[in-house]
Image (tube, rainbow, N blue to C red; front, side, top):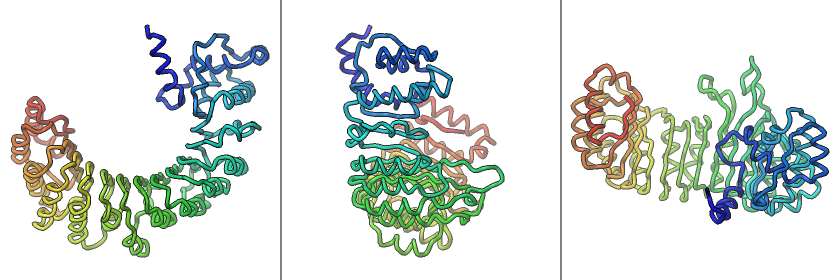
Length: 461
């Protein structure tokens, strides 16, 4: 049985943010019992008459005195345990949020997605002035954001779930009045009715809000977006240039994570991007980007640790732009640990530059090749060159290798690679064109052999 001293140490930690765990809160009757235990006797009696489940257990600890967060979605799920009636849930919400806001000594984290009963409370101002993190959706009435904007001006992390097809002016005002905004995350989550495309219903929920971020260019160091788009449609169906020009202003970024088709060909943007310097950038994650554009972003990134690109795009002159990309990594990104690189032409200059990259980037632990260049008939030749170079020059920190469709690994080169890899930490190799290797049982025999010998940690053939 866990002793009381251990509990005194752990309970305050667990209850600092009890709504953040990966559990099914809808079935956590223990949490429901704790919440309803705080209700006064007369309120308990009133709610019991409404046939609402109420706990009368006594508490060992004053759990809510440690709590610094409120998540209305999670709490509403817990409240629903006591009654299925929508009206009775409303009664419970009123009572529980009322004492919850008073019991928490200071609220640092607040999530008000889908519901905002808490903003009705008259005493809310005294408890939200120290708010550091806010998560909300854009369907909430703008007037509530106007109220929050006057109360909470020290928010450092803002996570916005966009369920609106037009701008929420209250959100813009809330962003404008912040004094130390560091973390901004935007996630599209609006519904599109059958028979419509997303670009047909959008009334621009973005431009006004994203332009306001320029005011915080000196403080924002984390910028993350996930915009709704369809790869199967024409990328130009909606104009995402608003986010491109926002990015040009955010020069102090440490983390840039963008899931959208925004990095499409734009000569004006490309020209301006050449002039921007992201010296502090450590993590760059982009779903789709031109090789030239990503080269511009990382050209002065001395602290870059992760470069994750799902899809490289290129228009013309793949020879020069791919060589410049490799050169930029080798000359600037010595601290890189995770690197996605486009498959480059099978030319001597490219492999010489790639060899320099491997020698200089000694922290590299994961190297993934993505399709970008394809010349039929030379996939095996490229694979042989690559494996030979990796086993000779790659740092002993390298543990993961990703092989795209444009690269094939011959049996002879693969076996030689594994033989020379002995003595290093086990390597994981992930191949996209697995059907190529499954045509020949000899591949599986080699893989099984070197797995047993501890050379291979994982290989997905």
